[in-house]
Every structure is written in C-alpha cells, then in structure tokens.
Image 1 (cartoon, rainbow, N blue to C red):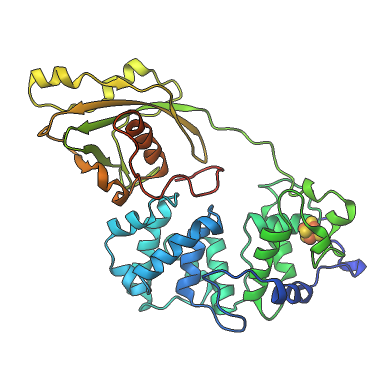
Image 2: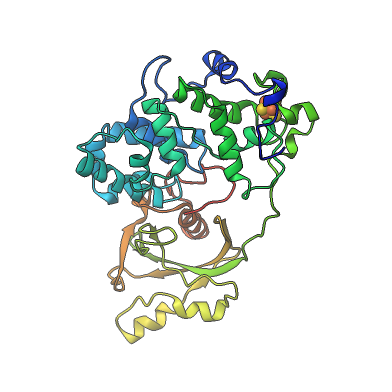
Length: 390
Ligand code: SF4
C-alpha cells in the first residue's frame, strides 16, 4: 500500500472499530487480570500482567500472576518486599530484568506518585521498565485514554489489514500509524484488548481464521489470499553459537555451590552455579582453568582437580545467541569452605533459589547423572519454546 494514505479508506473498506468491538463483546477472552465488561480495570493488575506477558505466553503467566497477586495484592506491598523475594517468586518466568524493574517501578510509584499509577501515557512511560507498549496498554485499559498498544500480534493484524509491503522492523512506524488510525474515540481500552484478542485467537501467524474474522471484508490480505505472507520480514541473522563450561560442585551432605550473577547484564542478579566465560571460540581445556578453587590445603586442592566431565551438553537459546555448556561435577567433603563470593545451598531447597531456566537445566543434567533427579522447581521451560532474552 501507499504510505501516503490508508488503504481502503477511499473505497469504503476501512476496518471499522465498532465492528471489532461488537465481536469483542461476544468473544472476549476471560483472563484473570481482565475486569468484567463495563468495569474499569485496576491499573496495578493491568501493569503486573503486562510486564509478565512481555515475551511470555498467557498460559505461562497465569500461575505467576496468581502467586504475585496473592503475595503482594497492592503496589505498596510489592514496593515494601525485598528484591530477593521478588526475584525468587519470578524465577522460571525468564527475562529477569523485568522482575528487577517491576520492583523498582513499584517503589517509584509509591515514592513519586503516592501509590497511584499516573493517568498519562507520558508519565507511565517515565517509570522503570515501562516501555511504549506497556504505557499505552495501561493508559488505554486502566484509564480509557486514547492509546493503542502495538506489539507483534497487533503489527501482524495491521500489516495484513493494509498489506503493508515494507518488512519489519523498518515497517514499525507505519504499522503504529495505521493502528492509531483504527482507534475509536470511545472504549479505547476495550479496543486495545479487542486487537490483542484478534491477534491471539484468529489472526494467528499460521493459518489465520479469516472466515471468523470480524474484519474479513476490509482485510486486504484476506482478499488477496496471502495473509500468511504478512508481516514481511527482513532476513534474520542468527547469533553465533557461544560455548562454555558449568561447574556443579556437590558437597557430601547434600549442598551445591552457587553464586549470584552481577546485578546488571544478562540474567542480572540471578543465581547460578559457577561457569567459565562463554565464548564463540571456547576451548574446554582452557575453560577448566576457570573451575572454582574449593579447598584450602594443597592435598585437598589435588582432590579438587577431580572434576568429572558429564556426557552431552546443555543447550539454551537467548534472544541474541545460542549457548552450549558442557557440565563438570565434583564431590567435596563436608566442611569444604565456599570460595569468596560463593555459597553452599541445600539441594533439597533449590526450588527456593532464583535460578534461571538455563541453570535449572544444568543442575538437572548434573544431578540426574549423579545422585538421581531432584525437584529443581517450577522453571522447566514453561515459557514459549522460542527465544529467551534475559
Ligand atoms: Fe487477520 Fe484474516 Fe482477519 Fe485479515 S481477515 S485481519 S488476515 S484474521
């Protein structure tokens, strides 16, 4: 389509918001964070769900949302919680920067806004961890302000409605402009949620259910019979494979050696077993030099060199690169001190640790090979199997 105008407007085929809202009134999804029809949504619940739903499926978010709400039913209670507890409750949901920002945002709302979410898109956007999409979602859903949250689902719907020819990500500004052109003057919160539902239930990436779609008459891609070809995408460049080693040190009394990652960066602040650096040109022999030094005496240090390389590798995919870790285990006597910056944690209590999925995979791999499987908590890849950005 031409970027100068809106496709179909001149032909009377412009998708009408009212048609979508009528469909939404009948078909809206029942979601735990949604208010009943006609009721204004609670900004705290909208915000909490929107942060959790970033890059994560509704199904995966459900139990976490319930857990957070039961434990911290208000923004004040979340702001008063220790960060460590928030991270632990978040463990397994992935993209951990969100948990740190969630906590920082709760504090900012209490300190700067007296515990009330600001009712403006710009003020919401200024809060920690609240990007353009989330600010628009809260503004529309909780305050019925004229805002359209545009995520991948909405981009797909709009690209198909108007057969937008330019590929993502370059097409984003055009798709946002078109999405705003669809917005009604009233019921903007319902309209935002209707667009989300349409993208999630009918206008799916593969085999969209166009025959059930309220906008089928106005949809250019449906009329052309090539909906699946939209949105157009620029060819992807895969990140290069990085490799490294993970060291699972087990003490004879059922403790495992852990440490915390630096607060900033990938998996920031989360718990891990010691690992080597991760490189594209990782060399296993050199990597062994990065194993933790676990003993104080020379004799014990000799014993400490008996790291056992387990067969196989643990594979994980982050947003910008895939990772393979080989896993080493060592058994240490009771009383072995933890090296500086590390600590021993009971294997039976690992579910309480803020372990990201990668580390749960590593521990499951090591413990299955050693002393039998243990319960490593709720995090075995409940998110969608696509890419993980921590
Ligand atoms: Fe999507 Fe099909 Fe509806 Fe077009 S008609 S918006 S392609 S579901």
